[in-house]
Length: 158
Length: 158
Image (cartoon, rainbow over all chains, first blue to last red; front, side, top):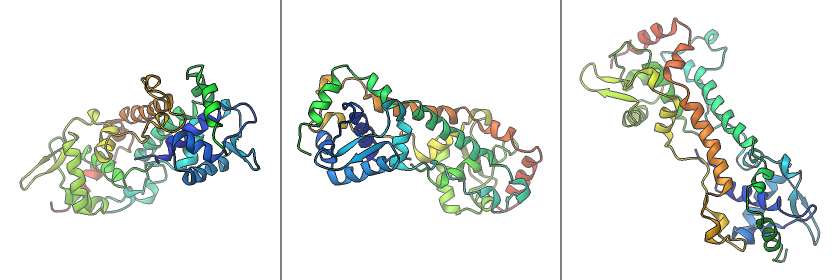
């Protein structure tokens, strides 16, 4: 059970964009430079955050990415699920219905109790990540960091 | 982020073994027949539950698998982590330390706040699964099921 390596990239990029002044943007090249990441692959992944409504992309000489919503409205869950999809890690293939022990269909109208407990655990994970916003992350970093982030992130050409 | 397909197999096999009379066993072949699963691969996976201390294996003509502990002492987490390992799905590769924005080492003595929040979510998932025992599962299935399980599971030759 592994999240893609790019999960870390996108969480950090979104947290960095949350430190920009309102309306300011950073390009994929600037973000790639800031974290020493492969720019083409990062650009593709940033588009998945646009598609998920987490980021907005603008074009033109000053174009780039910014948060599509306030940092208080972007949760870690939205970012993680934009990168990895929203499907649960446990897949119930209904083995209770097969083999010598197959339960008759009328006994399988309710969700398998094991699948239900696995789904509860996934919801606990989702709930934990849905309870943390980018604003929470920014609030927990040292006060001097955002000014440094803004300066270094936009120091390179777009 | 996916758990192996065999996670369902092992959760169900362990729940079935929890329905046997004390001291009774079922072989890998019987469990495979009961759920129509590939016996050699299932046998290998059952060994991982033995290694994890969830099941005990006995040899001889009446040999097979049984729970190594009371059903009240076996959690879904133990089974899932025996199958998939206990590593967390989010891997922090410390990208905060690399690229133009690299933080100096003295600023990285504490765990990255993003990694910490991802770890909290994983602990929420683990806590949810650690809170459900095989005894809880058995308690939530219809009363007539365990007798049927015992009968069908041991109907085939070992």
